[in-house]
Length: 365
Ligand code: DP6
Image 1 (tube, protein in one colour):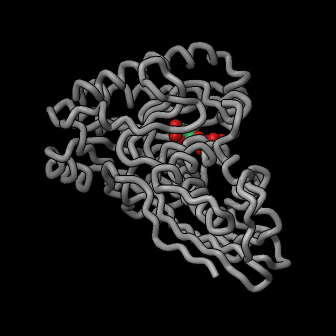
Image 2 (image 1 turned 90 degrees about the horizontal axis):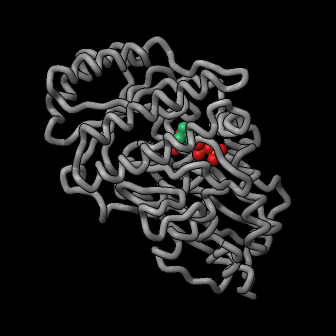
């Protein structure tokens, strides 16, 4: 892609207030997503090493309210704090957005952010946080210029831009199943933005649920961004790219044919492969906690009794359990009785396939 789609903002000549006292405001709630095919490893320009596939969630989400003012303050304050754990990542992204959208230059941004789940524990908090932040910034940019965007255009631009802030964020802009990364199997797919693929999904998989078992809420020892870098010198790098491509093709077939068993087995293979790659990275680390392994073993045992339930993990100790709505009662009984005691303070987020971000409010004066 030669021209950035964000150049619509540079072509716009109008830059309204905020004058010193003026304020623009936008508020969005954006969901986390759970990767079935993991994005792990990237090339320069925030290009994924392989196509990934995820399901957007509903209850695990971040709410962001961003206020922009022309004030002589630090350019970014998160919950009134310049030392917030997300400050560094958001600030780098904000600087990039300012280069792309000149109307954002010279402003101070106050971000009020709340997560419905613990951040930095492998529950894709950067996906929900960065996607919500991007939507707010784009809406503020639109308020400050004469660029008017339909919701569809806003989401597409936000997917393009949020990828730069955090790759997995670009998939959270759409509900249901989403892919990111160019693949010959899906027309219109791109390394630069995500694409919803719900029209390719069999109705039997339309109501998939995800119970997120919070085995530990401690921040993880390896940030995903660092993990991606480690892939560059990983002895299994080429194999991983091949494996991810094969798993991606199989997962797309499983989605189309409604084969939950195949989709579930691939999601487990992806999770164990991701953690194996982390363990065998130069200076490798173990992100599982004993509870993560205990959960995985119990899930396998329970499944042998005939019920459809599959696990996956992102780069952290917490375990996502995927199961269809028609097995909800039996599976959730099992989770409450057998797995809840393995979770930190019994914390479980019962979630399901969600419908994407929600605009909460916007205003300018
Ligand atoms: C294991 O999107 O957090 O969750 O682009 O560096 O911000 P950055 O990485 P990030 O990586 C997510 C990795 C993963 C798998 C996935 O979500 O696909």
